Length: 116
Length: 109
Image 1 (spheres, each protein chain N blue to C red):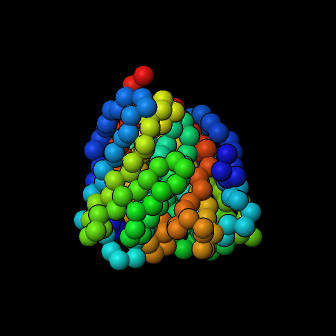
Image 2: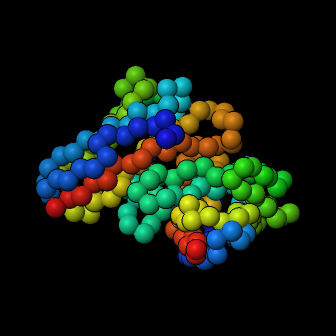
Image 3: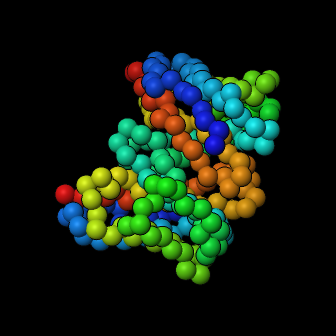
């Protein structure tokens, strides 16, 4: 257990529905990342927050995706009008500005999304 | 973004050493080399990292080439619990990770 939690762990939804995932980082970590991982591939970067500011977004993050981090604590990732191609593991990670182990990111267990 | 190249898969016998290679010919001077591993249905977990010098910790050793264009993760005695996908990642800037497909390590009993 890295101290990063994600909820839910699994989500099954029908195509066209909206879904929202939550990530709770380690409390003193001001930087938070979202990644997406499809079967057999490495995780792909989606977006990055420093405190409450969203500083970088990948081209993978289409208009149907939105991420927030109110008050710089927990973060949510919402997918609107889900498509079957959105089926993946969604991973959250957090880190401090100057970690003890280089640029180490601490990953949560992920939320596995299945779109039927 | 700097990229890494790793073999898709490797096998090792239990209790034997394993050397997992990684090529990163476009590495810049400020890039750290991080290694993570991912067990099935879990998020990636930190293994080791380095900048220029070889590094040792309780999990593994990291050998970095003098020109820093390649590195090798060394598991001194592989166990069945070490079966995982191992990722070599270069980090700098905003420190977002660019993962490749990693090396799937199979440990044979």
